[in-house]
Length: 222
Image (cartoon, rainbow, N blue to C red):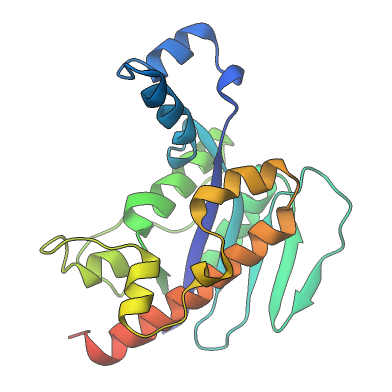
């Protein structure tokens, strides 16, 4: 069965880019200045208030894949390193490439893909009027189509959730966060023009997810 690991990186839109009524709606339940700042910082978590800047894909069997990422139109040739191809484009272009490639695989593997990556990919695609090619939100209990490792490691919500970093350390796996970067930093990195650094961080997440998948497949899966 052909498998592909998928991970995305997102950023929130500039709060000032929303009209006044939308700003009021977004801040509706924010009472203090701290609440308002927190709301603005969380815009990257939702597909209506943020966008995808990076999509990573890794075949865990061949260790080949690609990282598709936005770089604000900067001139950059497509390059390949250790079987991973780095390609640039705007959000619409990287989404189109993603759906064209993911349709050839039988199983999609994610970490929290049902709660984050999947809905984000589908809704951002709909905004660009891109037709999806694979159902990422199908029957939850069939991991052979979409194996969401967070679902598997919590036994579908029976026990508490931990983040990717915590699971990796618990299983003795090198965490993608050991380089000093985590998802909360992506927005600022992107604003500073560190597009390749964001792409490389996404790749590290893919590699960590691959190791956790292997661990789950060997010691936990039934």
